Length: 174
Length: 174
DNA sequence: CCCATCTGTAACAATGTGTGTTACTCATTA
DNA sequence: TAATGAGTAACACACATTGTTACAGATGGG
Image (cartoon, rainbow over all chains, first blue to last red; front, side, top):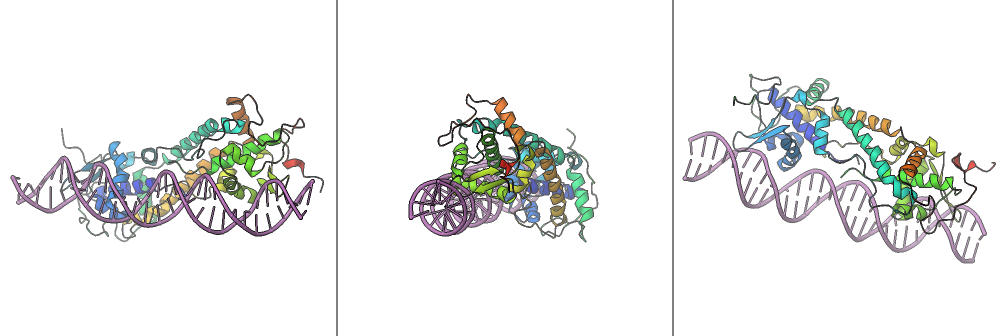
């Protein structure tokens, strides 16, 4: 195995939201996101929950609601998403506490913990080099599809007034 | 959670073997290693299996057998151990294949895979900065115990003729 | 005011992984 | 020959992840 797919699912949803915004649709419902993921809407809500709490996305209730990017996609790094969906370390320590009478068992925990934190920092550093916007550009360029929009049933048709990126639906003047 | 503890268990066992060697004991049985890990000998054999196949450790059968370091502890990096016990990537892709009709679902897999490989390289780079020998020195210095040896029942008493490190039990003349 | 829509969340089942445990086989040494 | 110890299969158990269903609460349109 290789860990879990929380980061993958969250990044996928964010890219999908960014593409929708580019085509003039500021919001997508959990069902529409789930259709792209081939999953179910509850999993989408579970995955996007911590992102909503952090302000990366916003969720609207009722008709016309759904998920929207809370910030420009160019300002969201994978490292930020990773920190939200995967709070723990990369590696686990012992399944149970090792023998405290053994010199190795006594001291290896804190030392390994420190090393694992360095590893986590290295992971975050590598992930911080990629933004949602950049990732979306890359995947559209390297793996293009005949139609860049739609293809999933239940999606609103493209709208000409598409905004390339721009800040979070430009909060109506308060 | 945070992945599994395979790396932790393998590194622990290697440090324990390195300390035993320093005190004149070239080999430890699975039971003795399991005592330090507060686990069971079968788990030790499972964890050390890939390390044995790669030559990092050797396993001897019968009385006087057990596990020995196959190379000096100063030449074994955590990156090498990690590559043996955790062959997969750090993060998982989608639980099932996403919609291939969606532009994001179609292209995000290969792009994310490439990024995850970069992350794995960063992890390996960070882990390669630590060797078993160095880790053992660090934990003995920062978290010392009154007695550096024994404390676990069933261990042979210390022997004065201790070899600090040296190559794999200095294979007896061909 | 009523109703359809959509998120939020709990509850449960299904699955996969990791780990613990037991039992047995086979090789090695005394 | 007997005791030791690795190798391995089989099974149970715990836990995390994911899928699924059901229901509560909020929102917006008519």
